[in-house]
Amino acid sequence: MDKNLTEHFANLESKLQSPDFLNNQGLANEVGYYIFPYDIKDELKLQDLVADLSHSDLARKVNLKIFDLYDIMLKRIDDLKGLADGDPMEMLYAMEKSDGLQFVSQQINNLLEMDKNDNGVVQEINKEISGQKCVVLITGVGKVYPVLRAHKVLNTMHQVLDENPVIMLYPGAYDELSLRIFNEAKDQNYYRAFPI
Image 1 (cartoon, one colour):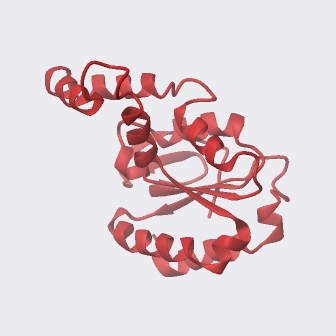
Image 2 (cartoon, rainbow, N blue to C red):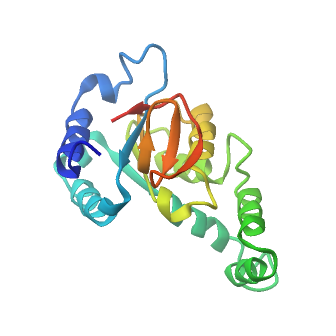
Image 3 (cartoon, rainbow, N blue to C red):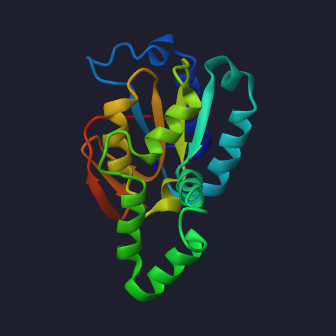
């Protein structure tokens, strides 16, 4: 990264104060989706910056809503308790042991209905924002990789969440054509977000 994290995050905070940003204006008819790429080595520092931001006057002013993909995934799995025989997490651990991570990833994607626009991630976010004017900040991308993929989350959200600006904190690189998680693995092509 050519900017240090503190300067980069200050740029994000500056964006949050822009009326054009908050109202999705000046985007050539695109929905206000943004990717904040960062170096994974800065993860803990970024978590501290996000925690500070979440308790700030700025967060209250723009009605900042923070969603951790990992927490959403765990909540949806936990919601299965009582519907299945046994603890869903224990079942997934057993599946991973016998069938591998790729199989478990497919099962979790099926559970979250990630092929649908109104999937489990979108439902959880919609439930929380329920028509409010706000800024959506998505964290936890690195924690859910490779089970959930950022491009898939963004592509489905893009179809449903189109009123409020959405910022995804992305541990890797984004060049307006593709995402590279951890600056290594190419996640997929993604063209609809603006870099911050």
